[in-house]
Image (cartoon, rainbow over all chains, first blue to last red; front, side, top):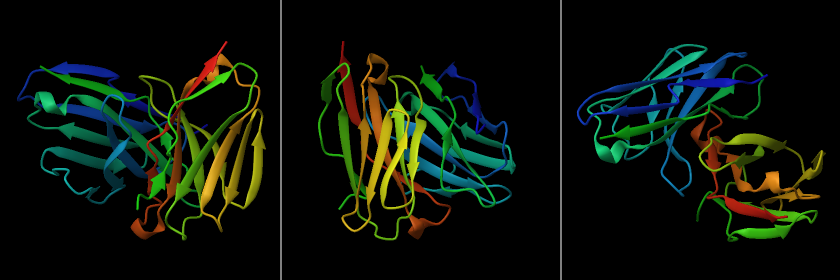
Length: 117
Length: 113
């Protein structure tokens, strides 16, 4: 159980275009999903927290108009990187937390490697 | 003070030995503690969770929690080359709600055959 999928697993796009990444909880309902970014040899950086049906909460320094998050259902959250630039190239990972009486465990998706040329 | 600290550098252990990883945290209100394993180029995988003081064993892994001293540790017994990875300590931060986790920078473990 507790499987989280992400799509696509990797994407290459041109500077100025937008990219959408999907995160799905496959066997549980995720009231909260988290989006992280990880640069090579660095730790996870939390970008935003999203709750189903409400606006995402962004971490300081993360541009909400650039990284659009939609948590439309209990099993799906999307991250759209708008007007991507080479410095946005990174490993984007989502995680999901089960709702209800579930604990604080976060289950991670396999990640999406974004390369902006 | 960082929310979660993992200070030791890369850890090299011979195959079959015990690898010991330590982590300290700053928020006394934290109640949930996790260890994740991350292979190079992959996303983190939850391997242990612990909520009460004391030890919790799962296979070759043992997590130890001491809330009074605000530290949590992970022992890997009979280390195998497949255990070579970065291990992330994670602690919930109640202040932020949503059971947001704070992650340490990670400890790289290299098991030498």
